[in-house]
Image 1 (cartoon, helix red, strand yellow):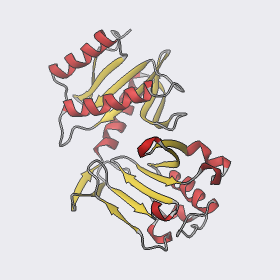
Image 2 (cartoon, one colour):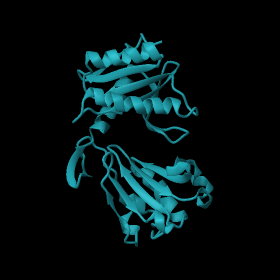
Image 3 (cartoon, helix red, strand yellow):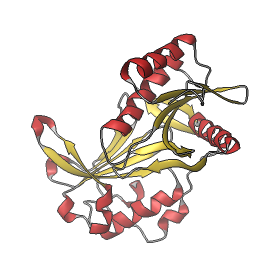
Length: 263
């Protein structure tokens, strides 16, 4: 992105939740581009009016709220694998973005997104460099292998729904359609990981009615406590939520409720 940018108004924004890099200025009426990194993907957001966007890219459009109740169009690209870069590159080729020179058609092939288990990145946080391991990728691979051994089918990793939400792993168990949200516990606690996953998985299920799951799984990479299990049990019994808590244990995974118990 920086290589194809000719302006001077760009740089890193130190945000608490995610590091963010920005190009251009909204105040100057320019098309504004931001990149927000998380542990397993990057969101490239382009703020431009949808009337300027080619029809074949409108599937990536979102409408977000501004302060004061106004709403605006954005185009969001989720980048987690090298092939995602081709879509992003094509967008910059077919649209005029302030201060950006269109990339050559095959330039995306020069980049590789390393997703191996031992790959490490540098995240800027509070002005300092922090080393982050891709433990989420390892959890996902182990979980998918476990599902395959159990005979579950239609397993999709990093699946994008019709509303452009991205489910960590989606699969089928007999006639049931299942969403699963994966969280790692490193540097945190099982309680915090469950809380974060719960918010996301309920968002996927209830915020938009375009796609529904029969079960919602929260998957973490550390053994859960009795308090964790009790919390999920209360949500199932009191609020009738189709939840299942799944955690790594003994080179496999344990579940609550047991797989034959959730109706």
